[in-house]
Length: 259
Image 1: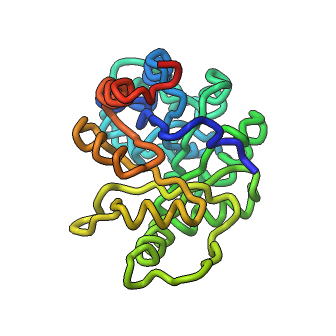
Image 2: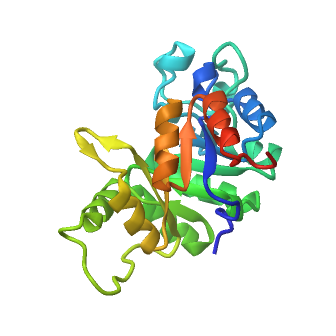
């Protein structure tokens, strides 16, 4: 089984490397997060037209690079010339994994076409133990698990999270010893604080997830008071765009690695 969660909880995740700085998912962003002491980095992957997994969030380049071309329509040689936030080019997944061999990467599979190339790249880089594959799409995650088996950690898709949330509600909770119904590679439920009007992360959810052997990672939280509240609830990880804010709360509680 993956050693992805071998660090003491709670975990501090740099969401897209720290998107608040404006250069999300770039080598510069990841380097900044690592320099601040982050050991877990959340990122996203798409595949180019020639099957190269690249680190990028959106389907199109419009928001961050000013062009409406899609990542999936461009070959790697062309995409490599694109500048993001006036800084580095869109990175390849293999380059990112190779550049930071001691960092854990939380990799969101943003399209079905990237599943197989991403799994292959992770294996080629020997990074199985330090990657967690995530997605909103249960089908995408199922495809990844079929290729990777239990060697690469995964989180839950939206339907699985909804099922877990329902099971955690006191009026639906079974007594006795419920058996896990998810794949052996699932190690965490990665969730927002709320989904529309429904609060996802509360005491019952965290308690039930822990009872079932799962960690709870919450995204994306920048407010120090909310970070503190979630830590008081006992969540196991928090993803943030504001690297300084999250670190400050962790440091104040003696939770920062080597603090």
